[in-house]
Length: 112
Image (cartoon, rainbow, N blue to C red; front, top):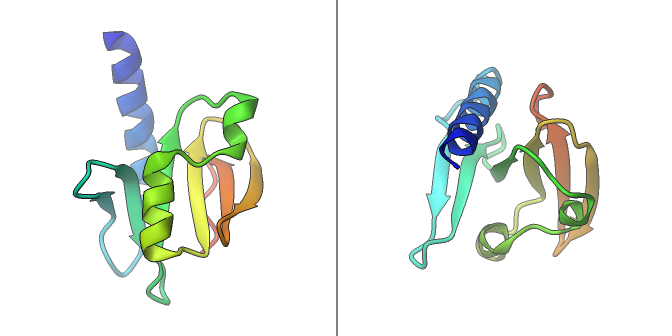
């Protein structure tokens, strides 16, 4: 619904503002493959690693064990050490395809 899209957009903006607090040397980017896979944000760590961050306002417990096609595509291309999901309040992690996948509440900053 339009209200859910607005709420999701506001949540994504709140996550973007939290990431800006990291004062990274490079600007926050997003990623889109030629086939249309997208990752909400990509930040570059101080050591030059591309770190994908996907924003999910709500997560079902089953979804906290999966990455989704877009992140799998990104991971296959860049082999990131860490992958992040910004969520409203879910906090967990798992290992997948050589990466550690973190689900963290948006009020926490990722550990680079």
